[in-house]
Image (cartoon, rainbow, N blue to C red; front, side, top):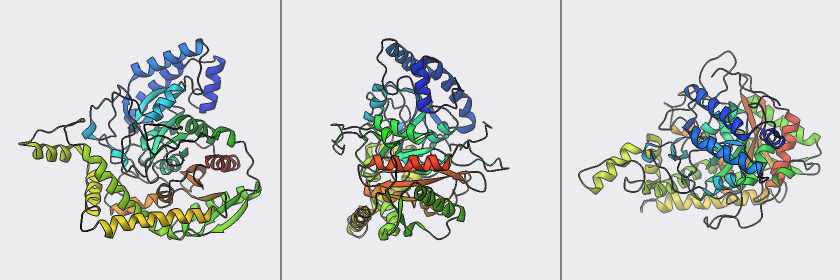
Length: 492
């Protein structure tokens, strides 16, 4: 058996099936690795060895009885935005410090029903608000990757930075994330992993701490396209507890990875060539086009003219929904309470102490755009833009089967290097990813190469709503052609 940490999820599952290793052994090794890495990477909010080993032993017992599920015994890392019964769920915020849900999120319940084991819960930008994982109450998460010849600490991307930092460091065989404007695809690109944002409603949001309800997409991280396909199809499914959950059957996403792409039409949108984009990202995009062309795809130039309005619309809609969702954290029902002179004073002191600066900024923006004098000028106009962006994609998918773009406008950057900049500079990290959230369509990032500094870059595949099968077919074709096997040098 190969080194347990270098295996893919599918390889680990096969090793468990053959009896080469038990889940208890695998889980104990990963818990130990998590504890050893935490000081350097700061990627976890909870490491609970007793809970993890309890799940692993229960899994081994099920396997002994011949009751193995699709992910039986496989250790995973869970983003701290998913409610986990009896285990702290904080959304990396002081205001939820010490909150232990008495219920399980539907996505994690699907994973446990398939036999998976939770190694630890991963840090994130507070309430998923951020593009670098620097806004967590527990401090910034560190990317295991470093630029050539440098020891500068880099961000892993956000908001699911803890999940990718752990997985890139070979802790766990897969991880969960959530994507509201790019929070799965951008960190995946920054760490050389595969990140999947399925169609809105494909994975239930029930039990996921809400940021912006109409934009939040639970999804998966994997070391390979096939790993992420198995994870996504296991997490997905209709959930009567979520009124926006899609009621149809879950397709065979893993099987789709082996379908040929010959004859597919791939769209290349001209609006994604933005000013100031590094030449190496543009060159990688061209490589991706050539890889798909060589496998029999037809390349079609397309236009998505509303793309330039996506980011402004997103930063009106998302804060508006966040200001409403976060109103529930008032010191009365969850986590932190700071006593004041009266009820209003208690609310104000609790929220001032519990929320970080970025969360407070977005609550203020959201409250402003929803206020009586500005609702029509900002919020209603943003909703109209949202509809036009959706129509853009509908028109494009009459001509093509999938769209190929870069995932991010840059590779990972240094921790703190943008903290003093205008917040808009940080928001621009989501420029290539946010349109898919606004339209609710599936998109994923595939690692495809390294920049001149030896840092990973990703390509993004976007398909029409509910067509995850085509998305995985194209992503697998890119993965096979790119042959991306780079790993961060171990320093932690």
